[in-house]
Structures are given as structure tokens and as C-alpha cells.
Image (tube, rainbow, N blue to C red; front, side, top):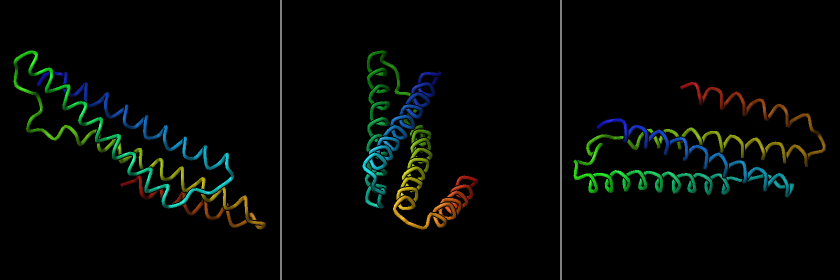
Length: 137
């Protein structure tokens, strides 16, 4: 198999994670600059976008492997290996971080609208506690 496939997969995983987090930051910035809280539909759209980015990246790596094997007239590396799982794990980590950013933005935007700001820090602290236990597993 050599080092070509692992290098391609690692590069694709980093790329997927960076692109997904860039989109999450763009969503948060757009809602914050408009002074609006994000919503659950935005989270679903963000997750769908992340899956599309990941699918495109996996297809790109698969295409590179196929092209390389045809050019060099060798067996395609990784045919029976689940190499795509590393890219999908990077996607899941980025989705979790992005959804956390969107939820934090929602709480902060809602706290800005409320006259009693005492409830917002408590809600953010609850959100932090939930996500800390979620990422420990």
C-alpha cells in the first residue's frame, strides 16, 4: 500500500475539518452581525453541508487512487480497507465543534435580547457542561 493512501487520507481529513469549521465560523459571524440568533434549521443545514463536503472529499481521494492505479498499471491501493472512516471522523469532530459554536451564538444572541442577563451565563455554563461530557467519550 505504501504511504500514498495514508498521506492522501490525512490531507483530506485536515482539509475537510478546516472547510467545515470555516463554514461554521461564517454562519456564526453572519448571524452575529445581523443581531439574530441561529436556529435548529441552520444546524441541520450546516450538518448537511458538512456531509456534502465530506462526500466530495472522499470521492476526490477515490478518484485520485483510481487515476494513479491506471496510470501506473498497478492494483488500486485500499480497495478492501475502510480508509474513508478517518475522513468521516474528522467530519464528525468538526460538526460537533460547529454545532457548539452555533448554539453558543444562539444563547448569546438571546441573552442580548433579554432584559435580565443573569439567565444567559447559566445557560452557557449548562451548554459547556453538556459538550464537555459529550467529547469525553
